[in-house]
Structures are given as structure tokens and as C-alpha cells.
Image (cartoon, rainbow, N blue to C red):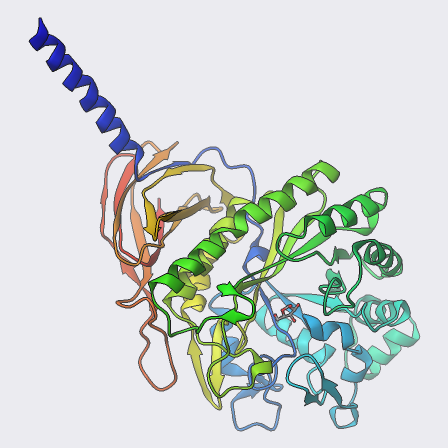
Length: 515
Ligand code: AHR
């Protein structure tokens, strides 16, 4: 009898152990249950008059020896077209709240200069203005997203800008636009009313800003506008609640609410190097990036409370890694290199935004060229595509696809007693029915074997994979050498009827396409 009890106990323990093992490293993707669309604008960009983002990045001028189209670099246009930028935010950032748009129109040699006081105190000659930016957006088939000067501008100036850009009627502003060479309006939809109004945008209190927001947005009238209120930063829930409360009776004036979250490790006054780091900094950057999700969820919970019908979109219009500037570069120019670590954290951020697509309607990584977590770096006539660029290229399949609900259980990545979920994932189904599953393994030392169970698919016909990884966690692409971090094809997976067993290498980002 005792023997039978022993055998039975071992049998039960065996099943429990098996179940425990089964629970680890498994993803269930519900391919037939998607409801939300991943707004393509989640893959948006941000271009500020800061350092060499605009000048030397996008703009070299028509007279430049660098090949250009009406002053905009051809290599940049070509590279960005490959990642299909859906929307670009301009002219700032902090710059927006001291930018006077009328200084940036008309004949370039007559435009007044100004000092770019937040960013290096350099002279801004205003050669890149409204027409040049909107031309850039047309060349890239991207939607423009303009940020209005609330900090040092007037309601009239803001109203004139909207009329100049969007009106088809006869008026002094539309006549001026026509005189400056543009007959038809551009019909810009996205307008932010100030930027970081709690800080560089005017150091306002949320109460004061909420009133100002209503005043400005009341008079922005030409065309069907999507008006976005300035949010607080990171975990400033009081700012969010105040703005939502005070605009609740005026929901016809507010369409979006902005949210900024920068990944900084260990802290703002002690940021690390973009390239020279060890596992401690790798881990800290992953941890800070993942922490965005709980902050985002709390903002969303407040929005659900004040806007239960989900009319107001959360617009994450500044996000990304912020490291120390590269040695011997202007500290006000925020020029940083970009490694495999940036690729992995970009994937984490984009997975988070995808998975909250019900509320997150736009996100704009900071910034497109030569500033912070950039897509591209330029030096004279050379250009570098960063690891982050390749994540945007790989992830563009999610733009306007249907978000697929999923569950994941996976082993932790642990350092110094702190545990993080080792794998991040999001999945979507495109209009042609192809399912895309994007995974990031944040562990720099260990591959993870995962079973992906595809509920709702009876028989998988074909799977293709792409991967971004590199031998070292701080590998990066640089001028004059062949690329170290790029996208390559990936096939380390086994296919069963409706599941896939995949070996996700350490420190890698993968997208599978399942048909
Ligand atoms: O992206 C750089 C700066 O960060 C922006 O100008 C500002 O909005 C934020 O603080």
C-alpha cells in the first residue's frame, strides 16, 4: 500500500512540476479576438529645432553640395521612407514656446534671426519654417503635428497660424500664404496647445494651464482640428487629474492629452554614457523603461474615470532614452550614440504602446535625427542608421493592424536580487490576415525558449522571422565602418500545427510573421 502511495505522490508531483514548467515561457496569442486598432501614429517621430536635428539633419538648404530636394537631404528622405513615418511633431519641445511662426515664412534672406535659448544659445536663422516643414511631411507622406506657442505667444498668433495653414477662404492670412507660394491649404489636423507647460513651456500650475488651454483651443478654428493638451511628466498624476477635471465640461475642445516619459538611469543629474556601460546600466535602463507601463496605466485609469467613452487619446509625444551627450559635443545639442540597448528598449516601449492601443493614439520618439534616441545620425554628407531605426523598420507591420490580446508567462531576468520579466511581446493582425508577433529578450546573457500558442489558427501555413541582435550589448553603428546592428532573417523555431517553439537569443528583438 505504502509503495502505491509513494508512486501516486511522485506521479502527482511530476504533473505539478510539469505544469509549472509548462507555465514558464509560454505565450498565448488570441488571433481571433482582436478589437482595437494599433493607430499607425504610435510609430510617430519628433523633430525639434535642437542641435543638429533640423539644421544638418533634415535641412541643408538648396545651395548645399549634399544632394537635396528643395533643401531637404535626399539620403534622409530615402532612409525615413523605409520606416514609413506616419506623423512628425514640430517645432518643439521647449523651442515651440518661444517660436514665432511668422519669423519662419517668406523669403529666406529676409527672415529675422533669433537665439535658441534652451538649446545651446545658438543663432536660429529661421531658414526652416512652416513651408519647409510641411514640404518635408509631404515628401515623406507623413502627417504634420504642430505645437503652438502658449508660453510666450498670443492666442491671436496661434489662431493666425491655424488660419494660414488650414483656411481656404479669402483672408489676410490666406493671402499671405498664397503670396509665399502655397495656393491650397495643407489641412493640418494635429495641434498641441503648448509643450511641457509645467516646465520649459511656462512653469505653470495645472489650474492655470487648464484655463489657458480652454482659452487657446476655443479660438483654433480653421478645419477639423485634433487639439492636444500639454500633460505632466512621468508620474505627475495631479496634473493629469486637474486638466481632465477642468476640461470635462468642454470635451469639444480637447481631443488628446500629451504624456512624456524619458528613460534616464540612474537619475537626471547623473545620466550614464550611451555606449560605455556594463550590465548594471543595461539592467537599470530596462527596468526604467518597463516602469513606464505602470505610470501609463495610472494615467489611463484617470482618463477612463473622466472620459469613460474614450474620446480623448493619450498622446505619448516624447519618449526614449536620454543619456549623457557624446564627449566633446555641445551639451545643449543632446547628441548621443545609439546601441543595441536602445534597440531593445525601443521594442519594449513600442510593445507597451501597442498593448495599450485602446487609449494610446500617438507616440513620438525623441528625436528623429542627431538628438537623443535618434533614428539617423548625420555628419557632413554621411548618414548612419541606428539600431533604433531598425526596430522602427521591423515594427512598421503593426501600423494600423488589429491588436491581438495575449498572455505571457516567462522566466525572469535577475540582477542583484531584482527581477524583471525576461521577455516582452505584442502581436497584431494586418488587413491581409497575417499575424505579426514581436518579442524582445532583455536578458543579455541567456537565450529563452518559448512556446507560442496561436489560438484561433487551425493550421499554420508559413512562418518567417526577422531579428535584431549583435555580439555585444553596446554595439552600435558608426560613420565609415560597416553596420554592426541591423535586421537579418531568423529561423530558429519549430513549427507545429498551431504553435511555434522559438529560441529567442539573448539581447534580441524578433518579429515573426505567421500566415
Ligand atoms: O526632447 C528634448 C526636450 O525634452 C524637449 O524640448 C522638452 O519638451 C523635453 O523636456
